[in-house]
Image (cartoon, rainbow, N blue to C red; front, side, top):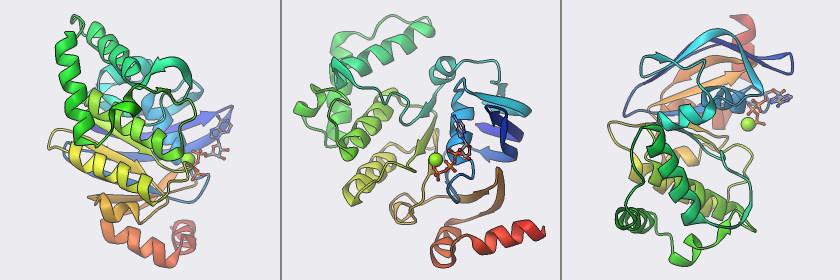
Length: 251
Ligand SMILES: Nc1ncnc2c1ncn2[C@@H]1O[C@H](COP(=O)(O)OP(=O)(O)OP(=O)(O)O)[C@@H](O)[C@H]1O
Ligand SMILES: [Mg+2]
């Protein structure tokens, strides 16, 4: 599904990613961990196609297609979802209306008509029940005065509605409390299937107790310096990152 080869990327002429190789297959959950500033958010932004980031070498394939030339919006229409893609507050636009527009834009890009209102309502009802989101929340203005947990809830709701093939959840600096961790984890677990994949970026081993990853990767200084199974996250929790930095320096 996602194949990253020797990816180098820079922002404002500063090299951040220095040769990332990563393959994510359908049905897999990957966790990316690593010290602050190692390039985790940069990696997700580059995959999602944010403009400030420049790919200086290497390739990103999504379902076999080189996506370098595609704008962020086109990548989203192809099924790549990045959390906090729409962090803006939009007074007067409700959570539901925003997602309706997003869905219909994506359908338009595929040459489809708007989703009939009846189907849209059914989908909204289905997904909000699945995620235990109440009606009042759905009619609130997007992100206006949302708490951290409510932002998470909205993000997971957007993900559920858009049914992306690849979801990248960057949980890094969002200050998740234990409830928000559960919202994210339950959402991901309920939406997981053999056809989609999730990349979760986190500092919290605890999140990985709820969303059990198939692979854990450690990013350090713009490279993946170690990969393993879920036990690697436990090892990091116990031992920190210094031993990994040393290993990387001696490699
Ligand atoms: N838009 C930007 N402008 C300038 N520097 C940037 C920009 N985005 C990222 N960087 C720099 O790139 C490096 C990697 O940042 P990044 O946000 O990818 O790290 P991270 O691994 O996500 O860290 P954290 O765990 O703190 O979220 C940092 O030194 C950061 O300052
Ligand atoms: Mg980050």
